[in-house]
Image (cartoon, rainbow, N blue to C red; front, side, top):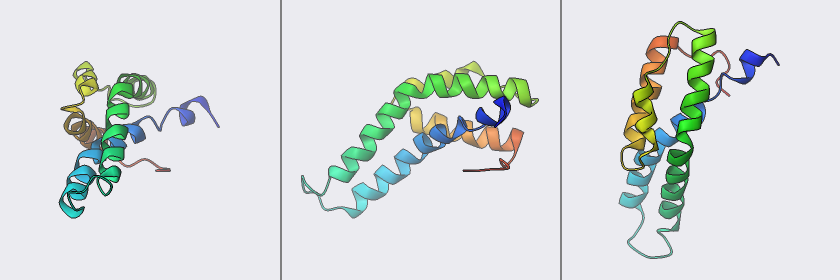
Length: 109
């Protein structure tokens, strides 16, 4: 595995962060309002919170990879993803812009 190949996957936890809001919304609509059945919703919210707190590292390393390997470097404004209230929305914007500028990864997993 080359150094550039190891760094091309930092967008994946950002994409997972973007998915936390729709998943949490779907779970809140489907699950009954019961303490025990809401545990999966709590798990999704906690994972989203943890990903939001770690997002500056994900953005930093992805910016480094993109600056070295591609012609697009994401804005530093994406570091606002660390705020859990807006993190899924900023992460979705990041993944969308990354897809527009860089394209589909050759090896998605």
